[in-house]
Image 1 (cartoon, helix red, strand yellow):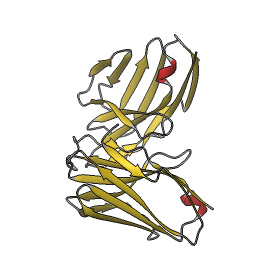
Image 2 (cartoon, rainbow over the protein chains, first blue to last red):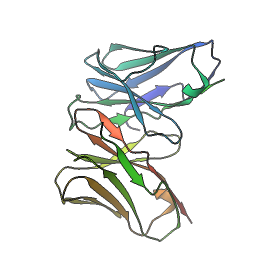
Image 3 (tube, rainbow over the protein chains, first blue to last red):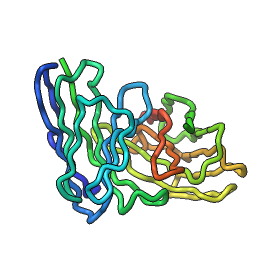
Image 4 (cartoon, helix red, strand yellow):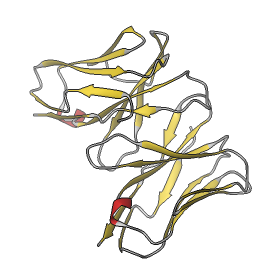
Length: 114
Length: 109
């Protein structure tokens, strides 16, 4: 257990569906992240939040919409996704966004878009 | 953008064998991290190396940072089935973690 939980663990959705991924950290951290992990591609940073403010949007399509209501919770709202969006979506948290801060990852949500 | 190249991409060995995996970049790392990711889980940090030439040991795992801070290696002695997983290197230069594509290790009993 890393102190970062994600729900659901598995999700199958159609291209017209709307769904949300949830991440919760129990570590008292101030920064939270969304990453995408696809087969045969390196882990890609999607969004960074620091103290509930978005500080990084790594050229992610608008069909992915993050929300950080407080420092412990992070959501990723999904709508009109494409099959190529199928991947493992990982959430992470760290004490801060500084270079030396260790990031702790959740177990991920395995998403399949049909 | 710094790119990290890991080799080999896949490695399948017998229990008890030794192995080394590599992480290389054309740019200098400010620091480098090694993670292990097991199936169905997120990556877990193993070690951070910061100083050129640094060597860190974690039980049977030995991590080395190149003198020029552009490469790193992970050596596992007497591999065990529990070492099976995806080994990722990552660099953080501006607070963003950039990952290599990983080395998938399978250790057969």
